[in-house]
Image (cartoon, rainbow, N blue to C red; front, side):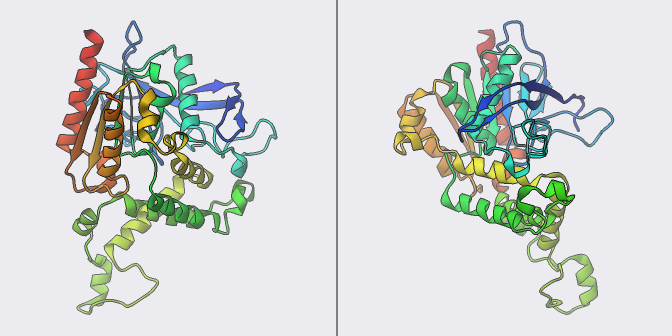
Length: 384
């Protein structure tokens, strides 16, 4: 349980912010939160980048909302691995999100209509540019570290390439230098579930007063399957029937229905899908999964990751998890090799954890210990 309260903030920018697509975004806002205190020489700032369905609310709780802990509350806070007694931590909600920053649910100032499907395509690099502008406005020239897991880790990597002079350390957890074809395929199936929902209306469902909940439910169910390992699914659910079904069956094997929810895993996935469809925006899901697909810093270097990271000057900590098949350890090792080829300072931890991709959000003692030790090193550099 988190013991400190936080306040969400927002900063407006006149723009225009040039985007990689060739479009530009004007009159936009970024939602953000800060934790801890910026020191006198402004050298202890750590930017934490969020993953697909997360936000700028990293840690702490909102006043009057006791169950509002931030999504990385186990990692960030006083005395925690990323210690806010030592560091000034910043969380920024990405453009195109549905948690406060300008996105598809907002009004396009040029037309006076809700953006909807007309919100421009955004990339990881665009998010980093926007984050850099926010740091400029906060008077922070350089970061002690940039940190992120999964898609957040891609942003951390991109920071070291786009603004190498502004990043001293990069902590990249359960991430990759690009998506595999299999990962892109999962994203595409999820997107198709959304865009073929009759309530999607070409992305302009807001005007119709509906939400494509069926598509969002399926998209979340697909994603959730890929975040868990087979071992965890078997341990938590196995082939167990729902208790209600077991009572009805009274000794027989199955109901043999193609429609009813009989297995525990079915019930769990439907619960996750229902919950997701109540709070996440369909256009945001399309935008963010596309940003994931497009990220590939080696593309401009003939596919050479070594050449791509020649411009990075930061020190790195990379962490992967053995059962994470969505962002496997092999992908982190690709990054380690590219960095070592460039004689960069790299620490790498491969954690033997059963939880799949979701392990980066959980309280594995070894994982938390690695991160804590690394940030103690970063803190020591600040006082040296």
